[in-house]
Image 1: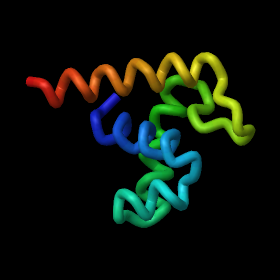
Image 2: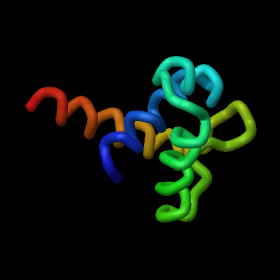
Image 3: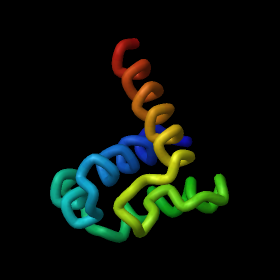
Length: 75
């Protein structure tokens, strides 16, 4: 998964809202939605579930994405 997709995924989860994430990233809703939809299609998992509580698989994926982005920033 490209870093941009991981970054947007993390921001959407942190904001708990696509609208807040769009405002934070200064982009329109369509691109951020596409960046989330692409890995969802590849993984066959809904990364941003409609209910408030995150699924355990999504929490694992979020942790992995945050670790990869952190490691990339260190180097």
